[in-house]
Amino acid sequence: MSANNLKELVLPQSSKDWFVGDRFGMFIHFGLYALPARHEWVQSYEEITGSEYRKYFENFNPDLYDPREWARKAREAGMKYVVLTAKHHDGFCLFDSAYTDYKSTNTPYGKDLLQPFVEAFRAEGLRIGFYYSLIDWHHPDFTIDVFHPDRNHPDVARLNEGRDMKRYALYMRNQVTELLSRYGEIDILWFDFSYAHRDYKGLPGKGRDDWQSEELLKHVRSLQPDVIINNRLDLIDQPGYFPDITTPEQYQPRKAPLIKEQAVTWESCHTFSGSWGYFRDEDAWKSPEQLIKLLINTVALNGNLLMNVGPTGRGTFDHRADVALSAYGDWMKLHGRAIYGAEPSELSPPEGCRFTQKGNRLYLHVMDWPFRHIHLDGMAGKIAYAQFLHDASEVRWLSHEEEVDPNIGVAVPDGSMTLELPVRKPNVIVPVIEIVLSDR
Ligand code: GLC
Image (cartoon, rainbow, N blue to C red):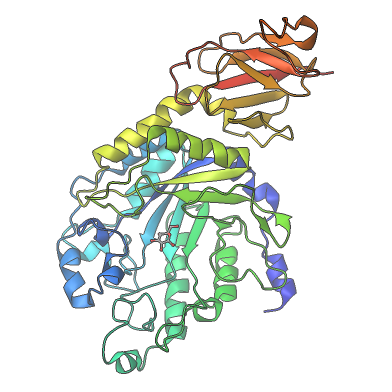
């Protein structure tokens, strides 16, 4: 395909406005790996053969699966869209695909999980995304590579004989057709992931030629022109290509990412505890404060946050996930105004704080609670009003003209505005001061 064709596939910004405004979504990793409950990569990490892994297929029965409950929890946490693993790397499908037997309808559970999922989340007003793994450790045409559970098999060359990635690429396009034609309008398609340069003992990694990425991209656009597609198809250095979104994973960028030296719509994805799939014994759960700060830090750099839940094998959210979600819910209920539709500010924030902004409303997120004062440099005369967001209580300020004797009181730097704060931090995880800028 020529560069021009790839250029034609670039999604206009107007099709992404909803996404940027929504800011906060829920990732859900659900599949057979919920049963071993020790990471969604368990089959690869522990080099579990297909026949050993089969026991999870034979015992998959999320009898308490109620997507309406998932959707309610997502909405209550302040999340506006959702991305669910329709298929993860183990190849297991949560939907009734005509192209494989390795699907939920053939497990003891016996049902398609996607249809009720889509209905439930739409009913709660959330937009719908599907995660679709490019990697597939079950498909017979998928060649064994660095991550494949059989990579250390003594006869790997023989196992690879007759496997045909072209047939596999067609399989993916066929399944994508199913995903994009059965469930109405889909808002996001999240492909995962490419590793063209990860050779292992003579087994090559995989990238755009294996997935037939350009073909796949074109196919998706022809089915649903407005769906947002992430950046993991290994097309980044192709002329004309520009991803709809870029997706830094499990780290906090310090600057907004650039692609081809240009600003890009971006979404950072994170877990509550390190693993994406349900991991019973994992102990690295983030604190409520870390969770809220991740969201603020991301939005302050113009990004979205996609926060993951890994439901249990019964189909429920684990208690720890519920607690983490309610930390978001409690905070977002009071502070959503500083997040939805908010953008970075051109002003640089005082130490220990972040700014977000919406028109003439500047939101000062106070991450480290200081003693009594915050100095806003260069803001003298520019503020019409200030209040805490959580309780709409007025926040007063001092300005240079009213400076108190610096030996006994507050020294207000010239040109700055000094907010007067209570000594005790208000009882919210990160207090936000809403500053109404004056027109002047
Ligand atoms: C990584 C992992 C995968 C997870 C994804 C989410 O690429 O392979 O398990 O689904 O991150 O971003």
